[in-house]
Image 1: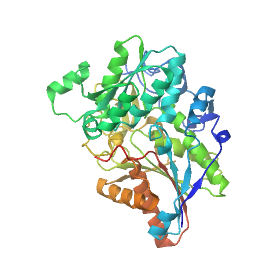
Image 2: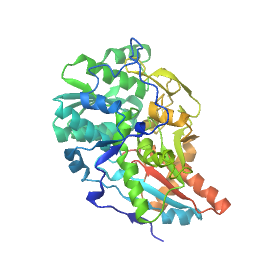
Image 3: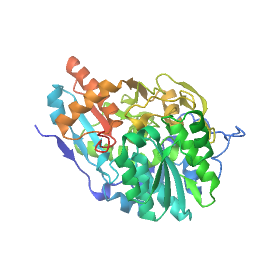
Image 4: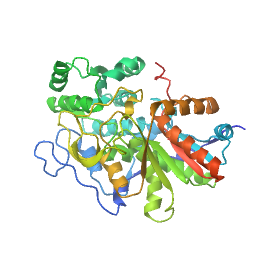
Length: 420
């Protein structure tokens, strides 16, 4: 029983991104300035003008520039697989589908927004970008995108991942980026943290502080973020929009949609086009599950409150699920999920009752990843393996109940740089 690959043509690449903010029954709380705490847009010169506009847009659909769509054609539409071998191994009546974003040149979904952000910065005349990366997927993706548009890139990579995943750093450098371990001696924020704790393993919150400081300090530099914010989720909705078309082509629709969450964008990318159907009443009963690590459970154990997006308090203040911006997560292998907070938009959608959150333990995640790999032949990224774990759990529930539910999850990247 072979698994089935469900393809689309290049003409089926979405021509617009979907902005869920246009359809929400209650608007999300606006961000606040990190110094004055006044309601405002993002403090300049953090992002270029078009990215700022998209961050606060209430347009339902935002057109994808043709230059971006042409680059998307290198790997999009990404395949959707019906995991029949996995279904057989589990002995479940459930139908399991996975949207495989590991086919991108970066090996993950991150390139969907990296190309868009690099394009808008190039149009704005930006010469240099500063960013952070957790496990390295975002840094890898942005290094590729910046090489396409001839933009200089500086990446602050969380120290524990910098040490665990050297090939991610080498990949970034191969595309011309400069990658340093965070906390680093290159910024005041990094130097202060190293002075207090020379062995600090780093965190996304620290790396964000360093990248923001870098952007503020250089007139030719803007900041780019690979997760958390609205415009990043917006660019990722190509995932869910394609998935809907692919499932329509086999006359199916998911009962359950699953994605892992660190900052929230691969999850929002696959989930929000389906949440749109919940909001407009066409598919009100679809269950949407965000899966996070038990070691960094911002949605399941954090508070929904105002907090800084970074450790040093330089990033905007947002209302979100958070463990506190000083929280230092343990150095779990899923480096991309080690963030103290959750996307304000994902948090807001959760508060509206449109999605559910679940946390899972690392050992059970890896067991599920191996089970998936042996059935489907793909070694998943540690982050993606969290979505796999819950997909397996839901399929096994169907085995007990006899229900033939359709389950779709985002396999947001492969794990071939995560073998250490």
